[in-house]
Length: 192
Length: 200
Image (cartoon, rainbow over the protein chains, first blue to last red):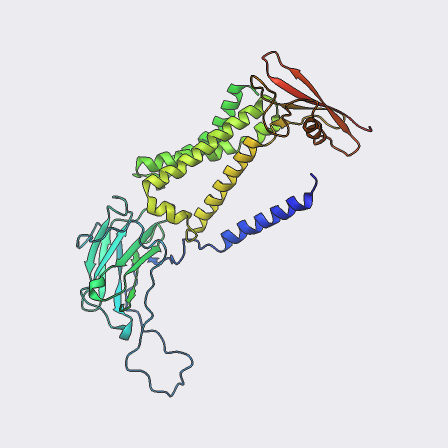
């Protein structure tokens, strides 16, 4: 070996690159929070965002608070098929629910079609998909069969693709634990 | 090690991971393609554990080492291909920069495996088993008209500079000199042997 230092340098750079690539990754994929729980706690509507910390305490609060819009995360559109049939339930054993509101004013949105899809004991993500509509409180809920690992981890998808209603499309990929009984996904939609 | 011995060793290491994986609850009621993909990956991982042993034994085991390495690469590529066929969106997402940590580690391991296989396929095809003053036997393949392959360790002629360079690479110290010697085996395969001595 004429230049052992060159090989050593290469190995150091290679090792650093591998360590960096692993350290910068997110455990479940970019933006994929774990939103699962045991389903016991009562679901409450999300509070509006707090006022900016720079605003003086004695300043008059705005009449309408605004909420930060939910952003799609990578993988949110995986296995998405538009126009899922409207269904009340896909099965039993797991629940996906949450609230849908709009960014401006944080007001709940009624009758918004929310599409959910996930891999379950009865089939893959393209087999277990449904559209549910929000009620007057902006709440949606659908019961499904228990989730199964998809590429090593159970994950669920929630999406709103209603451009004709004037909102930016949102596609969410979130993960849950295998023994979870519920996933809570709240969506805040931004006007186009 | 004989071929059956190698096969038994591979089976000893490769079958338990495959059985363990296929018996997992995760695969219950999963599609057959996923079962096939998992089987490929589990067999490859188990077989990979045998590789250092085969390489270290030298002689004919090196051929087995290369053969098994080829099989492992094929299994891993089959594993990836079946995942792509099963769920292209998820597979591509897993391999993307936004994929989960476990997928990134698997991707890095796959790249490293392919790199190791390429290096093994194109690198020196020899095992140096001798110590200082001993001998190093390098194997070359012979075509109908010429000696050896294009690798530095398979010189076309044992007297060429590349052969000397090849043999000098086998020397364990600057003071040792190894000279190339050639002969043919009974089955017609060409061999170049580096005879070494110290203190010259």
